[in-house]
Structures are given as structure tokens and as C-alpha cells.
Length: 149
Image (tube, rainbow, N blue to C red; front, side):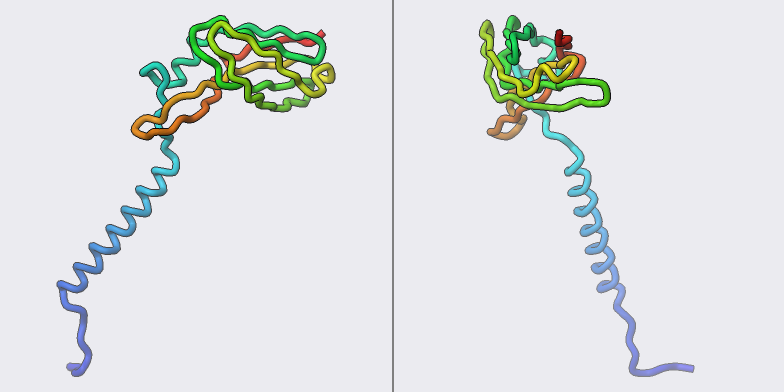
């Protein structure tokens, strides 16, 4: 039994539609993956994460202040201070640039209410392929633990 008056899509139109759907799905997947990929941040012509191991610094406590001395050859953009007590780990970032050979006195609120602190440097690096900079917090293994007495 033949039905007249009804027409199907031509093979050319259906092929074009399929190609457009594939292209749209590919763009969606690429944008989704791009969200998860990080830009490479460079300092001294190497990734900033490896530069973190070259940072040398000392930490002392005086009353309610933390004194950070940069004894390495990498400038420190800022420091992150974790205040730690049993069951508590408060994070506080202090925007203090500490040049090579310099030191900085940082006031920390409620310092004596905690048992120890961990000081972690933050370095400023250039985003590869772009004219911008980004601050990168070093790994906790680079940080210095200080017991508060």
C-alpha cells in the first residue's frame, strides 16, 4: 500500500543535521574539559609548584604576631596561616609580600587560642601564554609547623 503526499528527509539534509549535532556535542565536551584543566603558571621558567621547593623561610612567634623571614632566593607573595587545635583548622591568608632576605611581622587574631600553626608560602607566577599573573599556594609539605607555647 503506497501513501502519497508524505515525503521523507533527503539524504543530504539528514547528513548535514547529523554533522551539526556531532559538532555541537564536540564543542560542549571541549568546553566542559577546558573547565577542569588548569593553566600552567610559571616562575623562573619552571612550573610554580616546583619553585615552591626552592622557597626557604623561617617562622617565629612573638606574643600575638608571627614573624616570617625569607631566607631563600624566591620572593614570597603572601602567606597562608592555618591555626590548629584539636578538631579545628582555621585558614587565614595574609597579603604580605616578603622579598628575598626580608621579613614581615604579621598580626594573627586569636593566635594564643590555638595549639599550633602551619605557615605556607604563596608564590606569584605568570600564566603561560597570557599576560596575567596568578598567586599559587604551595603544598602543605612546604609549610612550617610551629607549636604555640
